[in-house]
Amino acid sequence: MPIFEETPMPRTPRSWTRRLAVAGLFATTLTAPALAAETPLRIGVIEDLSGMYSGNGGPNMVLAATMAAEDFGGKVLGRPIEVIGVDHQNKPDIGSGLARQLVDQRGVTAFVLGGASSVGLGVQAYAKERKITTMVTGGYASQFSGPGCSPYGTQWVPSTGELANAVAGAVVQSGGKSWSFITADYVFGHGLAADAGKAVKAAGGKVVGEIRHPLGATDLSSQLIQAQSSGADVIGLANAGPDLVNTIKQAREFGITSKVVAMLVFTNNTVALGLDVAQGIRMAVNFYWDANDASRAWAKRLMARNGNVVPTMGHAAAYSSVRHYLRAVEKAGTDDAAAVNKAMKELPIDDGFYGNARIQANGRVVMDMMLVEVKSPKESKSKADLYRVIETIPGNTLFTPADKSGCPLTTG
Image 1 (cartoon, rainbow, N blue to C red):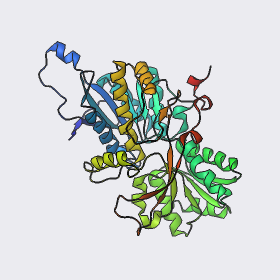
Image 2: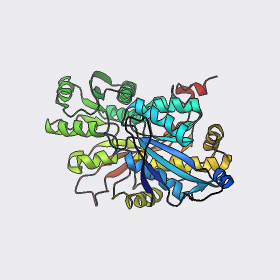
Image 3: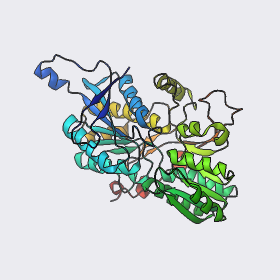
Image 4: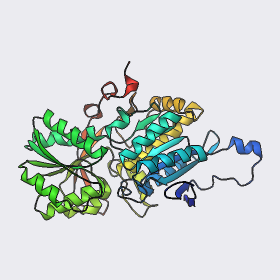
């Protein structure tokens, strides 16, 4: 089992971090040469550990990263592996400050980034300057592998473009021609609404309106009434987490059901809604715990340690990315970010979670995605039995090619 510790981190607005280290990695008596040879390889998980997105990632993101270190054997290049989780509270300034402390005070050489995209983008920009590896496992903004890309960064979850293309186009083709968006007022929401709008227009539909709301909004009745009164065929939800859950619940209260389309739904959101409310919702995912033997075996191990919480796309991405990173460190013979990321692009992604996975030159991990539908309460066989897989969508039909992503690394 992992060891949980609270470790003081001076000068942070919140003067603690949760550290999750693989058990048995610390030696108490070492000679000076041995200590130098076995300096831990430290991976920082910069995540929302207690706020509105903690169900999407949170402590289970840290646990998933730790499991990857454990499964790798607890050491790489003769060095113990240490995973440190810190809470950025979805505030970019706090996230950037914690990143600096992890590098300067702890010698962290890689970051796993989750929670609000605005935090992750700031940390990735800092990590690029410091030549630190970044693995984005909970940031869905396209900028991570677009204009904000890093030669040392990879993005393991679908961005707003892929989510929009997978859902919006299909809805237009089935008759939902006019759209009004309810949008979370920050970089992720803006990006998702913009990308969905492009997908709607490309499929022959039109956008007739957009209403924004602040993060953490509890009353979305005004936005729902405005969207309904627009006369749109579809109310597209360009939000996530508790905002998404609140919007769907309040839409049901207003009797607005068939019109609502969600583009990013996590398994924890489905659990929070309940199958009686969520049944019939379709969404695109790159991971579902019950999709194949490999995902089932890993998910059951995770759930045995977290109180049977069903893993999200982000949790799977944290495990997969850290495992792949450690394999690349071993192949490269160093934790140097340039050498490691070269090896990451060369090595196959072989954990079995994803179909046809590969890493593009811009750091975007391309993989097949699944269109899934939430089961009805009668169809579900257990609390974890949430989705049926409708179809598999080839990744090369959804993901933006590196040379068209806006990433400066791919331009001459």
